[in-house]
Length: 223
Ligand code: SF4
Image (cartoon, rainbow, N blue to C red):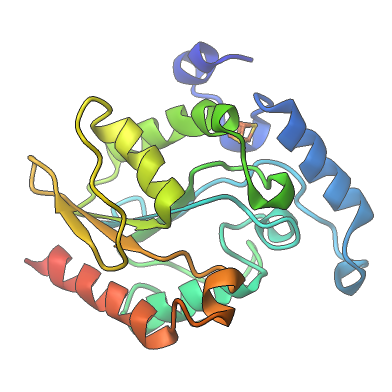
């Protein structure tokens, strides 16, 4: 499989095998499992995007977590980062329930769509530049058919990937929590720290700070 094949044949994300290191890692994790989830069947392959295809809010994270989305099969589901994200989405009116437990639960997003820079769980949560590049065609496709008004990037790497897709020849805006960059077509890139444990445990990102991001996203959507 190569990039052109992804583009030409509209290959579905869960069937992608473009990054052998990541495919192997996802599979290994799904076989070894974490003790707490030993009786669960892991998803163990590329995780598709999730949400409302008519969304005005487009959320871009980094990559599935090994025992989170790689286990449950839904973006940001089954780990602490996801708990923060879905709670904030619910409070801001973007979903019908506060929790996302598994891809089979009844959660529905309203006007929000979640995707990632890399769709496979990477070792140490770090996809390589080549793996990120491999995954960009999926992002390119999605931003063509979703009627986005606000791109919410969770972290610097998400901003880098989005910028490569939108405006590769222009100077990239500086990443800043609650920073905004208006594109020539009127859409806005809104920036937030990623709700990773590294950020939330250290209080670099607090819950009120994260809620403010979604409050601002709502304002931008309605403006
Ligand atoms: S990270 Fe993206 S491009 Fe690489 S194997 Fe997973 S889905 Fe395919």
